[in-house]
Length: 425
Ligand code: BJ8
Image (cartoon, rainbow, N blue to C red):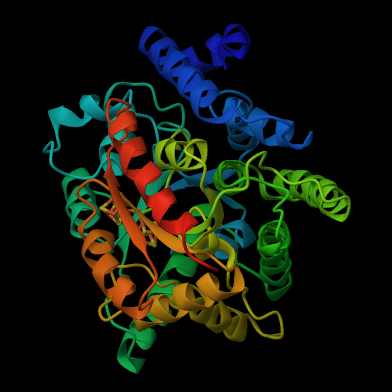
């Protein structure tokens, strides 16, 4: 990131980035990435594509979007996997997920937000307020959504339009959600000045489904006795999936999937010391944040599945490709996004079922609840998940983006590893 800096300074100046503070942010991101990821031995060679995506997120990707816009393209910022990318893409609008994962920017949110809200929100807007978010001016507007209270109130305060995500899963809620997806379609058409055609929407459904299929292919290899990719690297791949151009991501993911399949066929695993297998559950880990994954895997546990929005929740379900009319495709998109099992839903029976199924398929011995500090939905729901997984040991780690508590977390993870080591699968 730091080496790339010299080439992108002019671009950053043009889009209003505070160069001096941005250098501090890049230095922090570099240091944290080296600390959390580069201790791993014998990583798959094609992980270099995703390391590059991490480093490009403040440089090459910014240049791509700037150039798209210079040629008349439009873009929007998003903060949640409920925003249907397929519709934006079919209108020629680039959706850019903006969730921040850097601890460096968290305190810069103080000028508008209280300290006791989750670090994801504080990191994201800390970057915006400090002039270090390179995407801030590269969008027509940002689209919020009514999920957790902290997000809803942030959108109000900042004046962002938002999609109404229902909080229950009855027919009336599905009808409301469909009307919101249709409204989003009209907004995207208005923004781009282009009507979405059935052909364009079918193509974007296939493209985004291809991304999900590749993520499924990569992650299914983690069911093996010797997973060929670590939980940390699988997280980085999911984070890159949110940031990269979709076609570029699909090409890189295809290369990685082929390499992992070759490694698996030769019995090459990602771990030197195969400790107990665990499932990660809970809040997302946006790009830049991998502390909990790092501490857990460097303490000898193997994360073989991750159900969060930077894991399976992002790619588990496909949009049905069988529809031929525009209206049916919109309805299929609404159905697919309505199946997302975020903890903002109440009750959230689908999540209990989905996690139970994952725990069986991936043959885990325990669950690590990874909760971002002040993320009440996932924090409280951890108890219901434990009940649904009757008898499966679990460890709840509530963490912010700071590094000061790594060793305290490690002590608890090592004790949990001892508990799991004594249990049969
Ligand atoms: S679908 S998890 S991406 S809302 S971590 S801001 S929930 S207090 S990010 Fe999320 Fe959409 Fe749900 Fe997924 Fe609030 Fe929790 Fe913070 Fe969160």
